[in-house]
Length: 144
Image 1 (cartoon, rainbow, N blue to C red):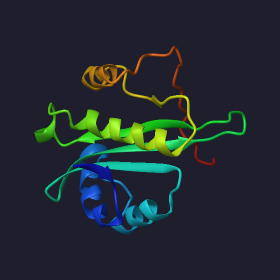
Image 2 (image 1 turned 60 degrees about the horizontal axis):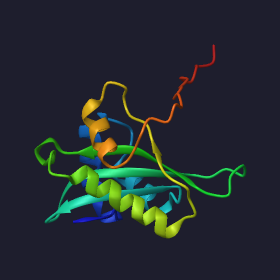
Image 3 (image 1 turned 60 degrees about the vertical axis):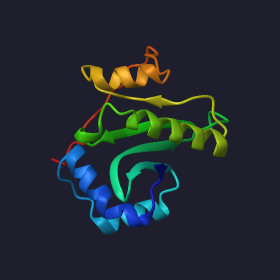
Image 4 (image 1 turned 180 degrees about the vertical axis):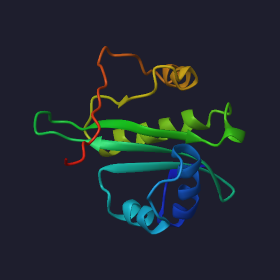
C-alpha cells in the first residue's frame, strides 16, 4: 500500500536510506523529527504488510518569484527484490496526486543521473521529459 510516511516508519526509513545512500549522519530520532517538522518535504512509502519496500521524497520549492510551488522529486528508492513491479511509479503517482490536491503548482521536476537509464525509463513512462535545464552543483569549501 502506498501512503505518506509516519514517525513509526523512522526505523525502516533509516535502513532504506542506508541501503540507498550509504551510511549517513541521520539517526532514527532525526528522521522522526524531520517527518514531524519538515513542512517542505513529503515522504511517500510503499508498505507491504508492515515492511517498507521503498520511498519517494518530494521537496516543495517556493519562491516569491512565482505564485506556485515547484515540487521536486529528490529521492526515489525501491528495494532490489521489489523492483520491476511498478512500485516506484505507484509512489511517484501518489506523491504527484497528493501535491496536486494540496498545493498550487504547474508541474513537477526531478533530477537523475545522466547514465541512470533504468530510472530515466521509469520517469519517461510517467511523463517526465528532459527540459533543457542543466543541473549544476558546488561543494562547500572548508575555511582555509
